Image (cartoon, rainbow, N blue to C red; front, side):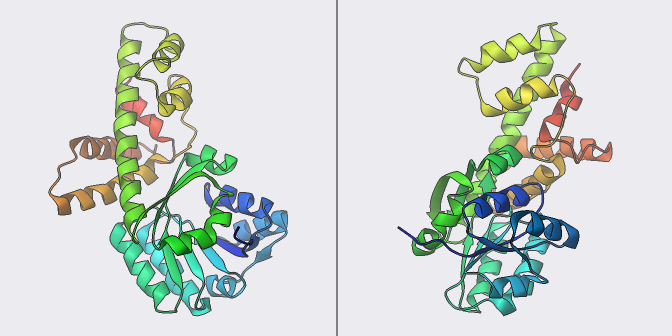
Length: 288
């Protein structure tokens, strides 16, 4: 059995703050850092851990650094900032959703300091982060995953090694494409039911019990039909992720028509000011 590690967490947004809290409950969180300083200060006080003054200082205090930021440029900036504090044998685990090439670039920066890197994007939304029930798809060396598994297990119900660095992000791209298709199917189908004058709560209940049942229908169906779009996964972030998927697909010569359609419709919603809503806000364009 692996011994507990001292972990540091960088990126305390909607997902990251809950992930850090779960690590802290196991006694393995030593320090936090966030670009918006008061967020880290408040969470550090709540959890009784150090509030590092910089990513590099955080790295000097821990065995493993976990990052969860919003975009490719943000990740590379954080990796560059923490690299002076890295030591041989340390492991950096990135939970952001970025391009596979970005993950590999981050790994090179970390590797130049003698440390190790895992790309480990997550799925499960805010609910999964809060409840410690995320799915984590990992790219990197199996031995490194085993070293940090005690930390990851505080946040996840399922952890899968997918292959070399970049494989985690490639798998997350599959996940994001699926989410786009499911969102399209659920919102379009419920709009079709509404147009027929059906009681949608009953539709959701009976359809969920059959072959068309799925998590998104169960968790977002009852709220979206009432015009409630509190974010579990922000539409603007999914838009960013799907652009990454489209760029990857173009290199493979794959058209991804559903992904492209979803991007266009998300773009319309973002222009109307709905980018910070849940992705189920797609129903705004479908409903009669």
